[in-house]
Image (cartoon, rainbow, N blue to C red; front, side):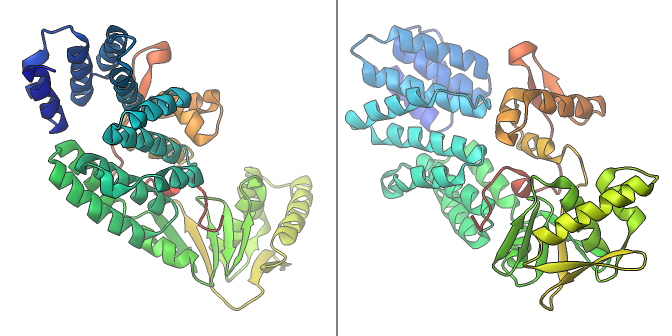
Length: 406
């Protein structure tokens, strides 16, 4: 490898894409094409970067399997940044195996970290933890060590383990500072910010106040009766009831929590559960049926008793009833939460992460675009959506995840 290629590679490793391009911008040999692709990716031109890396992979000879594997890993990283989450995992696995066979541990670790980040992004925490456990962080270079610790912190945040997350972010900060890559340092700072801004809203005895993620963790670990409006889950001590697939029951439960320790009027419950302003006898009859189903679902935790004007929630054990509500009472909050990371998303990637149909996500995006809250660029399959980060909104509780009790 000639001196210009070596110098360009060192510039890229230090986060200096312009310095790398000064040395290889006019060259079209395979190594230069690969380095130019990485440089364009660091500069944000992901389409051009992907094209250059594919050209480089084709330009490398059939015996240069190591170089081609590195191109595959670089293209996978671009796919992740551009939120192309349908990247073929088999190609990345094959590239990682090639890198390991040739002793390129640094790039093999990067390939593993890319898969971990993808699994984390789509909410498959158990799989991401398992993949991360196969890495020995002591063998990683500073940049990969920072990415490793960021992944650990991301898993801990999703599982509401704030102390573990803080420790991982402290190690990530040290590694990013050692790597001297500004974008990596900024990513660590942005992740750390999630621990210092409100993540949810507590509704209790008619009052409301914002909660930090650490306070949410403490609340869910308590013996109080906690209704989590982010996950549609009820916690009471060691008992857990999931109502994500029963939205009517959950709406009724939230209304009962908001009025606790008093009772909720029947008209209020009808309006919340059935979204109608004028209740008739059919609505009241249906309300009795749904209240009966709610009693059955909560029978191990609490009773739902009829009162003269409505219904009241009565926990079996003396405790407080706490409603963990969203900071923003917004129908499209999960979509906004994903877009708040500052990256550009396709509607198909959003649908994959949220577990919704692409058409449902597209309707949400159209509604948000009509109100000027999101913007798009490109057409057809290249269309991407983005929005500035939302102030005061920690996205962790709005993203798909496995609950701490799973």
